[in-house]
Image (cartoon, rainbow, N blue to C red):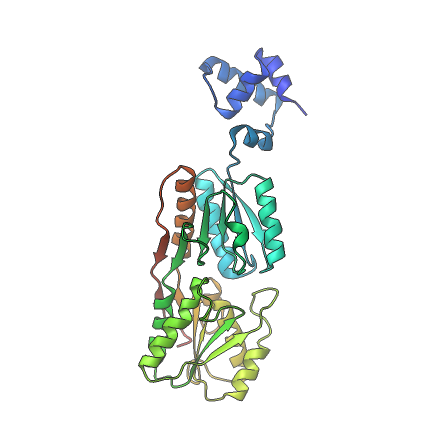
Length: 329
């Protein structure tokens, strides 16, 4: 494997000159620059990216911490983050926390050792202290971390109101809000919980009592065994509407209704949240609240790059949501 010394010897220049060409530092004549690049190509020389990062004090890597890459929402988000990061000359270092505080802390130490330029935090773990002294640009996704850390989110409160209003318009008298784990309305740091608040407010204004069902956290947030939902619907046969905090949970509800021979939407109406691809793959196709995932991903990378360039950025970056009505309502 050729070394930087081999390039310098064949090009007839010093190792320092080759290093300056690689890192675009200092004055180098165009003739010398072309000669060095020609020799690197002839020798098939591949520069040590970590060494270059140390020299430049820039790795062109962004750390991304998310709770579950298997979850359709986070997989789509990661796709767009990678796309727009690449457009700006950055690569993503993906960390899957599995909602585990210890694992997340280890990932942060790893990102520091790899000298990432910034961190995008999409994890829902409630322990935030280990983010506050990183001395790195951070962008938080849908979660309040600290006053000086910018947030990318959508109008979760309005999303909840849209779902409740549709139930009201359809004449539902016993709708239920279903969420998994810590998705309830009382965890203020997690901005997605405003969905429940908007939903409850709209139902209360119509004279209906909000009912919530909390599901257990699973290892993988994929549509799976809908036993909890089946048990709930069996015990509460009067339920005529379900607002799920994600399209994945809504898919579980659809499975449960199929097993209970409940007609959708005649017997029960279902609304999801996110509008990921699974919403159009289930049968019947899912009515849902759409988040603009592509635009949110683009804004997140924009905020990272602007911070790296020393620019001031807005602290709250909220996007509108919209109701997409399909076959489940």
